[in-house]
Every structure is written in structure tokens, then in C-alpha cells.
Amino acid sequence: MSGKVKIYYFNGRGRMESIRWLLAAAGIEFEEEILESREQYLKMIKDGLLMFEQVPMVEIDGMKLVQTRAILNYISAKAGFQGKDMKEKVLVDMYVEGARDIGDMLLPLQFLPAEDRENSLKNIRKIACNRYYPVFEKVLREKGGGFLVGNALTQADLQLLEIIIMVDERMPDILKDFPHLQEFKALISALPQIHAFLQPGSQRKFMPDDNYVNTVRKVFNRS
Ligand code: P9H
Image (cartoon, rainbow, N blue to C red; front, side, top):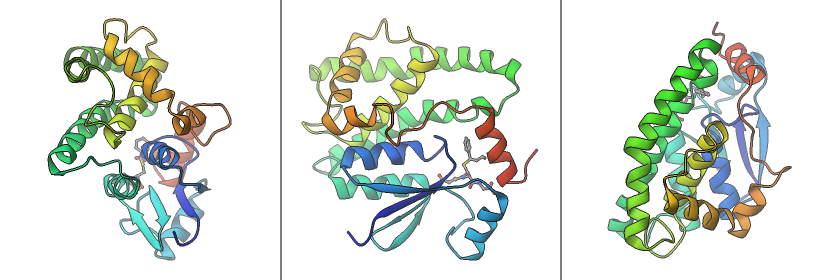
């Protein structure tokens, strides 16, 4: 690899967190440029760092990558997290997108007025429990446990675990009727790179707070 990987984003999860998870699972070290001010963002655009004037941006292998999914797929391919053939790969992509559907519902939560958050969470819980979690529960049940696809770790496992943990933080009892998801969570969390990433002091970010939201608003000049 040419040079150390550098990632450009806010000091929070947002759209970068799955990329952090993937890099950590792949054992790829990375440093972070934390986006804090509008001036910094405008300079990045002026210097030609951001193709669509958006972050996440990741410098890797001499390239400046943007677009979250493109970045995730590049790192996954590099790490061997995409399944062993086309049929495994498309399953990996389907599961990743399914898990990201839940992630996409969580993303705007902290940006909502405080009084609307509880309702939104209730709705997310309903959709997760009725539509998404049963799918993953069934996949794991029929496979007899282990990884979601084939016999090795893929992007699908990482994306699902990230979502499970993120949802658990908000609704600690949500897995009670999903024994295979509980087992999956324990299994994948125990893999050495993941275990390390889940410890305090790693490059994992914490739940968004108002400070994070204010920084995002300031950088993008939004009210
Ligand atoms: N297709 C952060 C946290 C929660 C929800 C959204 C945004 C989209 C990709 C510049 N990036 C708030 O809206 C910030 C993208 C990338 C792309 C950006 C602008 C976003 C956020 C920052 N916006 O998948 O990578 O939308 O750079 O001028 O709107 S993330």
C-alpha cells in the first residue's frame, strides 16, 4: 500500500462509521482528518480533494475516494470481504443494503427536533423487528449459525453487526426474540480485530450528540 490511509470526516459516526469498521476489521491502519470548520471544508473543495463536494473521503492506494458505497466496496474487495464468487457477492450486497436501510433511518435521528426523536425510534424499532431482523434471523437459522454468507467473514457480517450494536444502544432489549442474532453478535464481536475495535479508546465513534450536529450544520452552512 502506498502511504498510510487517511480518512476525512467529522468527529462522529455519520456516513464514515461503516468505513472505519471495515478498515479496522481488515487490519488497515488509518489516520483521521477531522472536519471542524467551514473554512477547512471550503479549502478541501478548492484543493480538489472532494469530487462531489462531499465527505466521506478516503485517501488510499494513491487515490482520493468518495461515495460511501464505492469506498466500502473497494476496501472489502481488497480485504477479501466480498464473498468467493458472483453469487456470494450479490448476497453480500443484498444483506449489506438491507442492514444499511436500518442505518439510513438512524442517521437523521439526532438532526430531528428532540421531541420527534422518540416517535422516530418507535418507528425504527417496528420496522427492524417486523421486516429486517426476521430476515437475518432466518438466514442464520437456516445456515446453522456462523457467517451470513459462505464460510468466511464478509462486509455483510460487519455491516449487520454495526447496525445491531448501534440499535442495541438505543433499545437494549430489541434482540430478545432473535436468538440467532444474539449468537451472531457474540461470534462476530469476538473476532480479534473486531474485539479490539469495540474496546474503549479505539477509532470507533460514539453516539452523535448536539455538538456533532452543530458542527455538521456549521460546516455545511445549514440552519
Ligand atoms: N452519496 C451526516 C450525518 C447524518 C446524516 C447525514 C454529506 C453522500 C455518499 C455536503 N455527505 C448532513 O447532511 C451531512 C453526503 C455523501 C454520498 C456532505 C453538502 C451528512 C450526514 C455529509 N454534504 O454516500 O458518500 O451526503 O458532504 O453540501 O451537502 S454526511
